[in-house]
Image (cartoon, rainbow, N blue to C red; front, side):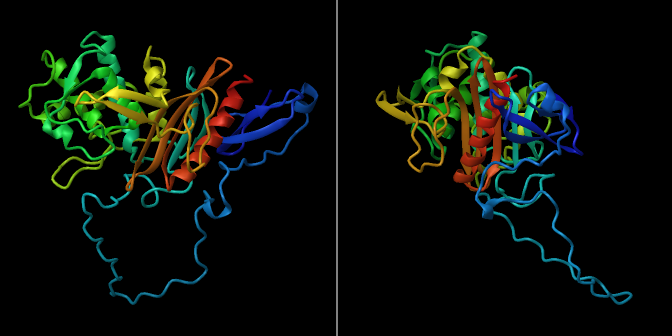
Amino acid sequence: MLMKRHNRRVFLLAGIAAAGTVLAVAPIKKGPIIIGGSPAAAAQPRSAQPAARPALKPAQRQSSRPAARSAQPRAAVRPGARRAQPPKPAAVGARSTPPPPTGSPGNGPRVPYRSAIAVDADSGRVLFADHERTTAYPASVTKLMTFLLVMEDVRAGLYGLSDSAAASAYAASMEPSKVGILPGQTMTVEDLLFALMVKSANDAAVVLAEHSAWARSGGKGPLPPDAKGRTWVDAFVARMNRRAHELGMDSTRYASPNGLPPGAKEKRGFDISTAADISKLCRHVVHIPGALKFTSCAARTVTDGAKKPFALGTHNYFLPGSHDKDGYARPVPGCDGLKTGYTAASGSSIALTASRNGRRVVVVVLGSAGRQTRETAAGNILRDALGAVSVW
């Protein structure tokens, strides 16, 4: 192996043929160039060629270089004259596209994404990184933290997977995607976790948050029918932020257990994170015993609040057993998680994990302008990352 530095951007070998031929490369930042081949070939100097971004149509590619300044001279300003001020932006409604998160360029989702990273799940070694610390709205990828905290409750013996959790009126009021649980109805914690990770049910996320906070306060059994769900959700969100801090997710701020934008009457803000932060969360999730049972499930039938069968289907079409009717993504052998996300304000996001030859990777793509763009970028990064770790 030959290691080189190339200015500030670095490229990582994504696959090496048996004869030592370089198959493909994927870009990372601030790391070594790893070039494969025979010792004789490695001794020969090579010119570092910049790797392409994940394959996209020409019209979708974006240059990382700033746009050239106009050659036109600026108009002279008379002494004492005031420069024209830009008009103030119109007020943004709660459901409108919000201003971009602090510190991130542009306005809203980007092509191919706002933030992306691939890491070795065991060592944390960065395999690919592109604006990995740019903040974005993770949407339903937020549910990974809700999932983690509930799994930690179960492992701590606070309650069991077969225990029942009741919905408040606040939980039942959530927008789709949802399982339609009504105030006072109950579902098992296990079925709620499947609804959370497979269907991305927003009401299930709130029921689990309420149940967790209620149990941690010393409450026994399901949440009382007259309980104020918002109060228990606020306590759970505070715990989400404490746990994020413990995991080193320094650019993350949680405001909900499900990633929905704030309602018109809500004073909370948006959930904000980065690909680098979400990768830390994913690395922790995949090492929890039993977690992959929920994240790898492409389809599941649960018992809903009315005690009727309710069929769930995944939005993660990289999972074996899934089928993308649009043809944007195809299953990747070894993929067993984790979570997708979408809102109009956030764009399309995804967190993936897969293993090959005993090595596991985590890939996070946040803020793609559309699902097709997201699937193209995430699929290319995932396959290249698996190719890289499988030959180390």
